[in-house]
Length: 311
Length: 311
Image 1 (cartoon, each protein chain N blue to C red):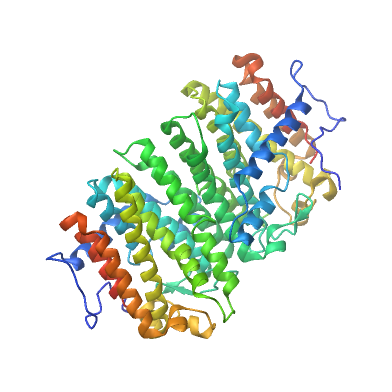
Image 2: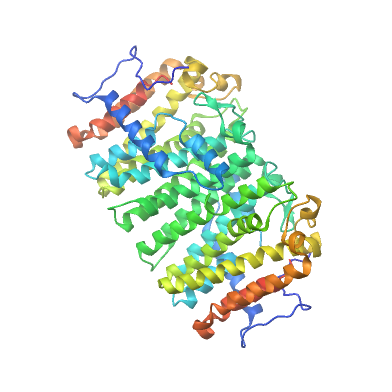
């Protein structure tokens, strides 16, 4: 099974200037994975740490930590200051995947090409591993961040909690569950689901990166618009890939949405219009970053990456 | 079904001085429940808020918030400053009960005399309600606390995260799960389970109350010893009540430990020795508070309450 971070060469990429996206993603992913590995060393009781590490270190694009690091740097902060928050964002994301895969939820056996957490450790351990990662995310930000004022860190804690709770990710998942099996889900509901289930955490990655660097309210508003656009594009492309990509490419079961008669962007808008809309959202996202010039290269490149990803 | 907070009149109570424990507990519980009700107003999507509120507002002794409030006041802080953290501690406790009751975990149908969360809302919603409460607890401390420095609040966030994660509650639950069905669990393992599954959060209640009020390291060490003693006593008495109290009194299934051949303090030490040990722990806890004189009346009374509770 091949799970690379290569951009699909058949798609148009509009990388800005001379920025080397591949090198940026590769180096960033390696740096984040080393930090994640250090963030959660083995301890007694081993089984829970093994289970948490199994999913936290299972690969993936590490898009959320990279968004946080890149935004913090763009706004004049350091990677070091943002790394604990970047790791915490990935812990929270991992929690949501572990719980989402449970038999009581989406009942998925595979994730990123490997058995899901509960298939390896059991449902009980998987529930606790998610709880442990969620609690540790907040502890880790408070304990490990250096060179950022306590005021800003509290803002980050609040932002992360909001993005994960009923006003964010959990709220999106509930509406998603309620919409299952319904064939008449309106686009407003679909937008709500994705704005909360996916985009809220992506937004928290970008906004917290800005907060750590002391971004102004104006900058924060720009960052929020950038994040919402890439967040929605991300989800539209997820829906498209569920139709066009193979399970092998995705590392998880493909075609699940169609099989479940799930309302998706392609089912509501058609495949071509969905692609057009995703591309427009990516362009709008990048336009928000114009005031930052070359310092925005990495965030623009991440937007292009989201627009052109094939798994 | 009668679920009161009355102390069993057949047990010896050693309330200090003229402190009116009943009035303190009754007033404190009412105040905390009003604050909890305000902390989580209904919103869209209603189902997740209903589910979270169903368990958060299901009664109980509210011992954890009261410990936080009483400690903060004893150390010179205000109730107002401690109330958001007190509510957050109850949110975290509620999360642990919701997840613990799931079929994949302890599979309990009743809690506090009512159907458990997943019996009313389904396993999927119950998992998400727990996640939502856990995330909101941290957001709520950061967002709502007034008159406490950001430095202290970050310490509280760290303390709470540590108490809930794999180094605390979640770690205790894992070892508890691993010990199920084993008849040769040593007392060291039993102590580990309870020190983490129950005592860690009780300790966080007390220590965070002290932190909010700016307690010194010496005070924090005393508070920690007080909390560990009442935490272990709490669990020993839980084990005793599982044998001696009825399901009606407990509001949950009684006799489960014996039925599951679970190793408990009474099964290891006998009923009388377990009672003796619980009493000794309560006395040691109160002795730690001697330097604070009458200001410690409420915390001493809570210790007595734990030592004499009958459900």
